[in-house]
Image 1: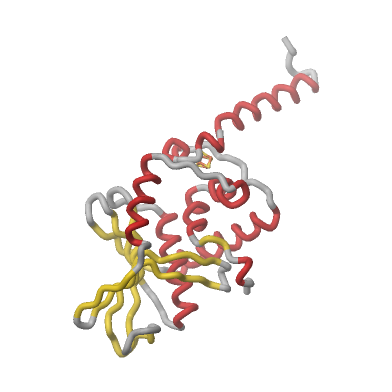
Image 2: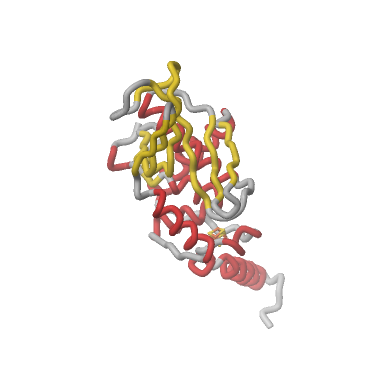
Length: 222
Ligand code: SF4
């Protein structure tokens, strides 16, 4: 169990799922840079995180809900919780009755399969389960650009990925060691590419290797 002052931002789960070095740049060096994708996503999220509640009949939707887990050592905000009245549900503070809870995370772009988003949504569900003492089997990723949902089942494997990522993030902060860059196709879409400079690492690796070969007499310095 973590203390309150040890909690890390839940959004770092998504960063870690995308690339461990990206999470390291954000957590250890407070590095951030927007590209067109992150800027649009931030603007869309700001509207959701303004908070509030909508209710109709036996359904309700809460926006911008603070969540945390002392077990995972994470805190953050869930974009939206869809509640449906059900005798097998759990009590929600400020609301009468019992409710089933379904987290919905809003994402920029078109429907696509992004494991790091599924991890982030699952982490929100695990926080809520700890806070509310309930079970949450599924949630949704809602994609703004085509106004469609992608249902995510919180399987044992996905939950294990979240636990592993949360532990890795805490280890990263404890050690202060920046994960190495691994140049991949993801770098083309990564807003931190100019801070990370993955190509530079590749060049410096080649340079160090050449120095090693020269020092061992296996390569001519000229
Ligand atoms: S540029 Fe590539 S290696 Fe660097 S943080 Fe982004 S995805 Fe990771």
